[in-house]
Length: 120
Image (tube, rainbow, N blue to C red; front, side, top):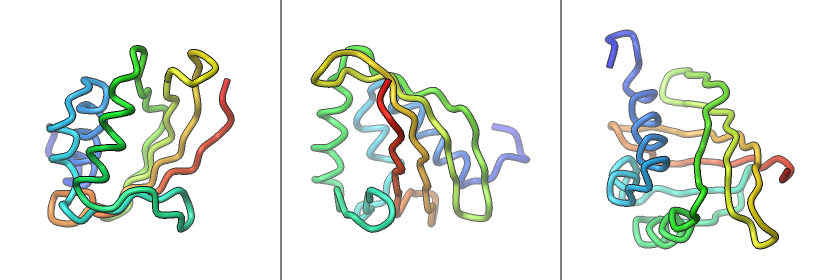
């Protein structure tokens, strides 16, 4: 990657690429072993590799899964992505917009928060 791209941004891009490739091991490799995933602001939904693996494995099994990056902001070790995600919901295929906030430490995502928009 270009020299002007920060390490935190590279880590987050690596996990987004792995998500879209449905590569569970590469996706998990972007996260610290004790990483925590929250629904913003403080609802813990997964903690540690085992829980992240379960959560991501279920999501990656969706046939039309794809995250489109709409906008990214980087400040220090914090990366904020605005994404449009195509998914298969119980009621059928659709999209959802998300704001994802990632905290990166030592080249791994240590904490992440999601802010979920409406389904379409």
